[in-house]
Image: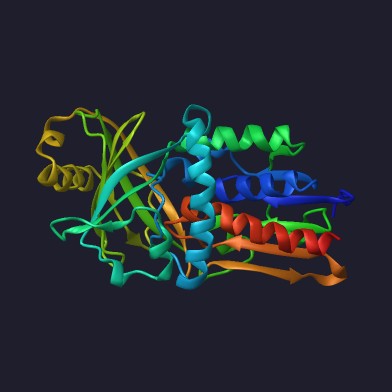
Amino acid sequence: MERELSGEVIVVGGGVIGLTTALVLARSGRRVRVWAREPAERTTSAVAGALWWPYRIQPEQLVGQWALATLAVYEGLAEQARETGVRMVEGVHLGVRMDELGTWAAQVPGLSETAAGAGLAARLPLIDMPVHLRWLRERVLKAGGLLEVREVTDLNQVPAAVVVNCTGLGARSLVPDPTVRPVRGQLVVVENPGITTWLTSADEHAAESTYFFPQPCGLVLGGTAEEDAWSLEPDPRVAAEIVARCAAVRPEIAGARVLEHRVGLRPARDAVRLERQVLPGGRVLVHNYGHGGAGVTVAWGCAREAAGLAISAAS
């Protein structure tokens, strides 16, 4: 093992979970390094459509708490949308009812059933991830943290008394944790024909869904949720089906010029792993991974809990 970096906390993983956790730690006065095998703009987080909403993530009770804590942060960040990438945007979740959701739903400001009873309407955070990841990275540095592109192959060999594991899908081999699995999501970005609201029609257990999010880069169309699928190559047939499903809701999408195809692998797990593990020799490993399709939605709530575990261990 390399010489231990005395007093530092090393966060392994540079997506939205890792950077948010590092920022909370740095702001608490801890010396923090982020080790990531690739820059944030190349992580799964950068591909996300990034609407705040608990999707494909468990356990429900804890998720609700983490999500509401994160929502409160995003509402504040939306006041500086240009810098943070967070905007509050109106939209509708089709086919969703309040009584189908957990107790957290009653605490989401303005969340209500549509007049026609077709779903739930809300004004929710919609995040431009490239901008938001850049903002997180800059804030970590401003708070005194360090960011390094560095691949970790053994968590036991990371030279710090406290290590926070935010490696997402990488935890499958790194922990190792075979219960972590990919849920493949494919998106299509088209020129926005003038749509200003978001819409989702998604069954958490279905492999296909319909949604569109107006982002600065264009209108992001989705999507898919393919269990245990590892390919990062866009499938032209799937892309055409995504456009067709969205155009069935808003016909003007049919003629929109395609700008980009995206594929991301959601780091799914039966339940988020957020806990402290004591390693031989007294070193501490805090796990914060397995957020499925809702890493953006719970980032701040999970970061605060993970940071609390790390800080208590370092004290």
